[in-house]
Amino acid sequence: MADVEVSRDGAVQTITLNRPEKMNAFTRGMHGEIRAALKEARDAEVRAVVITGAGRAFCAGQDLTEFGEGGDVGASLRETYHPNVHALRALEKPVIAAVNGACAGAGLSFACACDIRIAADSASFVPGFVGIGLVPDAGGTYFIHRLLGSSRAFEWMSSNRRLTAAEAHAWGLVSEVVEADALAARSAELAAFYAALPTRAIGMTKRLFDHADTATLDEQLEHEAQLQAVAAQSDDFREGVAAFLEKRPPRFSGR
Ligand code: LHQ
View 1: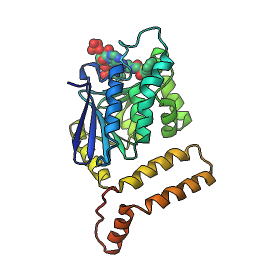
View 2: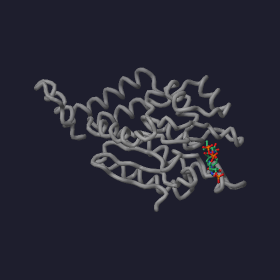
View 3: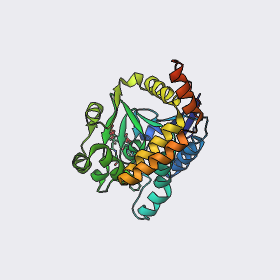
């Protein structure tokens, strides 16, 4: 069995971290498999992606049995984690993290690099890093302070407090919490909903929000104008307007 499983159901691709006996902790080999899966997700036929974990964890972060003393940790992060974080953000389609259980360290960073997070009621969120004397990496400081605000992000990441799914929902870290048995069905339903939307517009909305983090108002207005010019050329824009005027539900193709 692969350590990362990829399946396709219609326009939805599911990527399952699959080392349940090790809480899906990341190994060097898994990064390559995730990279290949995210490359496959670029296929225009894929219009939404779900990332989840097998067994009782989402991902416990770096496999600490593989990560010994010595070696160039910075180089290892640049080689293994960074390309996948970039690939997630560059995917011009919605990526849903279906957090089925413990989510810690770089696993937490990875979930936070996704566009939408839903969680099982049994899930928990653990910074992890400070517990072993490290700083958050794999984009953790970037995404978590944007999601939670600096004050809460710092308090949480520096205290290493284990957050329940209900607390994560109250903080806005996850958008929804469902019973553990219902997570797979609910994430499939949510992904199918997103996969039926105008994918190019969704992808460009993602790009615009990422750009907004560092842009001035003038830069952002210009970026919006440029991408709107592209969206206005799409089949989905034509279909959306036609459906509105004909008072019928739109049938978006993602083109
Ligand atoms: C594990 C792990 C794990 C191996 C649980 N590795 N076995 C990247 C690259 C380079 C440099 C450094 O940084 C990074 C990024 C990082 O991700 S650093 C942060 C790494 N992650 C952590 O520090 C989290 C460590 N794990 C935990 O805090 C807990 O185990 C969590 C919250 C994940 C789960 O807690 P519980 O549900 O209470 O389970 P448990 O603690 O009893 O663990 C179950 C088993 O899983 C246990 O093994 P055992 O043989 O006793 O059953 C753990 O040793 C193993 N495990 N995380 N990261």
